Image (cartoon, rainbow, N blue to C red; front, side, top):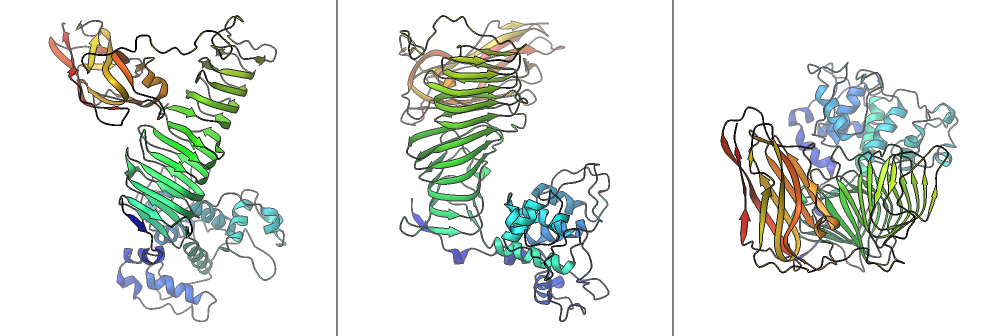
Length: 609
């Protein structure tokens, strides 16, 4: 792979790029008559020339007039070339309004919200503290220590509590400033001139946005790392970033697909957002990440950290596998499972984590190896399922929602504050308040580090299949309308490391029951990493993907069940046949080479009224 040195001079400034969005007519219109000698005259002229703002039909610009919320949004959207639109339903924004699309774009960008009463108030003027909040959200500046920054302002007491972090942030970045009389005037309406200058400074803080779209190695050298003062976006697989400091955000975009992206000696001061990648994809070595956000739609992504890598906080908004390998750094410090967007995906952890927080219901967490310092099951994490591998130790666990803990792993101390909690293996110490009961096994010693029995025995014979293949079978092959049967999917293969399957059925005749869920077997593939287990009854598709851990050898499987599901014949069907068949498959061995299957067996169901 050819190394490509990034040339910062070749990166287009955002402010220049967005000029092409607007017509030359707007840029060449007559200059307003009322900005001559104004303190913001130069900036206003620049924005007029670029077509980012216009004057009024009477030839005036009115630099000291207030700006409405809709106007401020329009200016912001133009300046940053924001084109994506979100869904809006504000009672005071109608599709016929000129600002309807403006508000939709602002909502999609996430820098403004409506009011609690369901309105947006687009025609209300924007106060200086509201402008600070929008700019802070746009740049994702986060919370700043406001005391020292705001102390010099005599009117700091009139700043709303919600605005102080944002005001502190924009002041610290030099985006906004106070007045000569040592006031900030948070409630004063921001003027058109002030809005232009403020947003122009925002553009200056985000001088560059670097996008990589071709496979290759980009960055500096170990002796001379480079610094990017804005955001970096990776849009394709096969890209390596090395020896780089990113002062903005790093976006590993959807375009990576199921491919791979590598970070080597990269420091990201903003957020690292993972939206693409697959089972063997995001590899991070000798790097420092402040916040890692995993948000991949439809499927899981694997993030492996090694060397001196440290990740202060991980926010999981979708299923993921977090793995530490050959690690000398601190690795994953805090892992928070947040909104899973209804996907109910599996989170797999192989490594040491200081703090693991579960905050959403129906979470599935599989800790296959390592040590968890503190595990917190929050009050909103109802029906959580936690599986602990035989080599896992949890020092302290606090449970505030009904949940189930399975597996032979060790919990040294558990504080359980609610009913409806069960443990497959008894914690060393359990603390419950009065009136709370939990389900525990008998106190007789079970499998564990001090037990003579093997807690996780390998399947005895490690079968040697004579023929490789995928097999679909059912308890009953002849069904009447309204009847159902259990369908099993099995595999035979030597040195099996990972597999992907797509199965088709006729959605007009059949449907998968039990909330369209698969029942995963105890196959070693499923106990390592399940990347997909999706059923779509409307399209008649089942997608499954699973893999062993990177340091595991391939297994020999002889008609080993992968998963099962309950299929039902829909009412009103006439006598006919209906097939459940394999549409596509891809299985890899431990050398990550694709395997050729000898047999792909489908299932033919007979429907008899």
